[in-house]
Length: 328
Image (cartoon, rainbow, N blue to C red; front, top):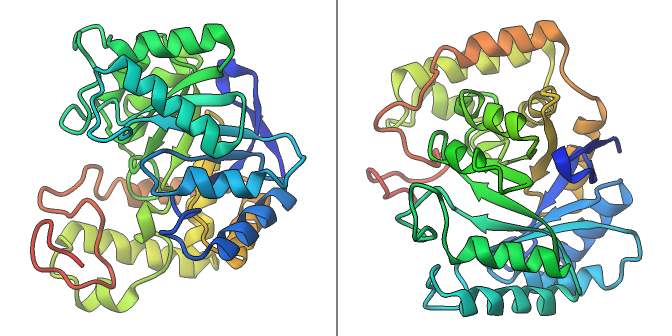
């Protein structure tokens, strides 16, 4: 598998990385997670991302990775632990890092990220909200100086709150999710340019929009899904029709689109099984999409350049929908 340099870190990461959310009890039994992870490593994946908020992902990965001798690049995060979580508690943040090291069975964390630094309603990270400073910035600086972590990062999901934090110049890596995919492009406006300006390595999460671009929902798109706005419905139909025209599957198009951007170092897969790992790896091996395909996909994305007002954050394809926040 090809590798790319992760910004100013100088680390060489595989173009396809493994997201740890489903390498946990959320994704299935331990044996399944182990098989999928080991197959990913066999295929050349060398970057794995996890977090305390991903259920028992750190523990599961620690058990799996103790079998592995191949050098790996591993990232985890601060946020959500210990409970009740207080982002202003320096001692609590240090205890969280100690727990990550224990669970992952490592002496050093390659990349330690602040989880959701751009959503103040979730974690109140900043005591100085203009300069984006707080106990967490001091913790990261101290841990890096001590060699307990190698690099620092941000793991966020917003399109416009994240760039000013990137532009402080304090961070080495950004993991941006939900805002850079076939049909959602807002990261192109400020997130990606800010990272490029600062030499920050870019990792893209949720390239398949948590399932909304992982498989096709032709019947629902054309004749159901009352929560789907008319512009988004027309956009989906245009995308499906174009992929039929060129004979490309939806998930392959999604992964290869992200990696067609040379600024992106790695795209994360949320694979739960060997089969999904192999499919994703095979797609990435085909390389960036041709220029003429990207041009058509750009035109389809431009049909709905911003998220429609009432659109659910996670499009509830295949699930019952009762109204905003009520899909299940």
